[in-house]
Image (cartoon, one colour):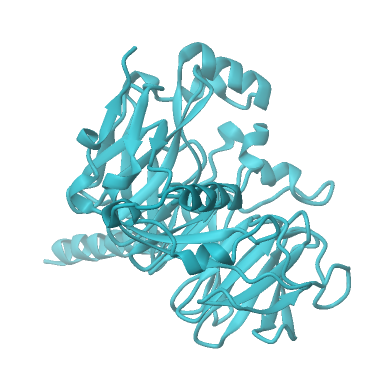
Length: 417
């Protein structure tokens, strides 16, 4: 009986150890969605007009204070649109949802509330506090919506992307290249996991995947691949074929892309510099998920890069039907200026940036045509909207919804070779 009791105690101890290890690791999801991509064709084209359910355009007001150089990061809430221009103006712009300019935060410098290398923004909607991630010195700066400085949070290392979860915890993503090259000399990054969580209770948690040291010398990993949030936080570890969702501190696989023979062989690229890495990938015709992804409750969108072709392909995946479409080009009517490549998302809508030149082209086209069928103008901005657009306008945002039944390979056509 004593022997049986000891065995039970050992089993309970092992279960407890396993549970503790699982708290901040990778969730072992049994049925992970899989999308097979084993051939990328540069003639593949999507018909934009047939994919859209609806589009709403928002013009960002132009004043002396609100001229945007470039949209590098964008946040959308129920009441506001936040724009971060990292390089050209080093400013945060705050607009209401109709595009009316409210204020700008522009505080370059090295003092409290000032920044030298802005990288990313996040908003705590419960407290209405805007967070700005500064790369070096490593810190998060907090402002209220009137642009007033509300404090700073010191960071242990350099990060380039972060988000806030629904509990107000700060989640940062750790990139391989930043382990040795993103910190002060002689102080390499000792955080070995992909995610670093700073809870509102003061805890510091290493979570998600372990850092893949194969790519530490590859400068591509210094790019901002980033955390994306829309209801849930999702992320994509560099050169990993899976997109994950953060649930608590567990990384749960959402979608795995099966590249077959085009999957990167890590033994061949282990610790190679960027140039040698790209040469090997081109020679072997490797594919990999490239750049930022976006998500809505129903869709995931991301790029896949063909190393041999040196081309990015765009992928839209329907989580409910488990169907996807992959295309290189997109075509639309001259009266549909909607850009299909999103920069962020909000609820069930993707948000993209529409070039002013495309809107002006459409505006002049409308002036030359006397009668246009209503159906042709289904995804067009109104005449009143276009009248406000000129060469000095800020970029225009398109909030659009996709038709779920059209997200499949039948909506992609191939031009004759």
